[in-house]
Image (cartoon, rainbow, N blue to C red; front, side, top):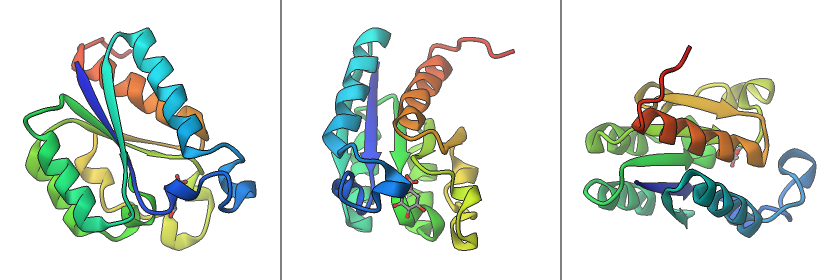
Length: 148
Ligand code: DQA
């Protein structure tokens, strides 16, 4: 089973960017934690980060025939990118939306996610664990592990 992890704009600056909101760990630390979890789950993951909306659309398209599922933190694009929303919808791969911070407890412009309706679900506010839980959720979904 292959899962694509996508990190959107500004997530390359983790560790430096607003550490009181996003923490002091770096993107490499997030990916290292995900690779460890992927090994435990016995799945393959690849991770990409991009600051460009079009590039993220391309990564989603390229995932179509290569991957089984997507975990995406679209960063600020979450709140307004209809092209990312449409790409997720177009590729018909199951997708989990994740956020480090709790977007619902922050500024009102962050409360809305335009990608939420085309994702299986959203995990928000658990720092690095949001990604880990997102990975577990997509793997359980693909393995059809029943949920209570
Ligand atoms: C974020 C939340 C977004 O509102 C913000 O623009 C980000 C990061 C998060 O992971 O908490 O870049 O997606």
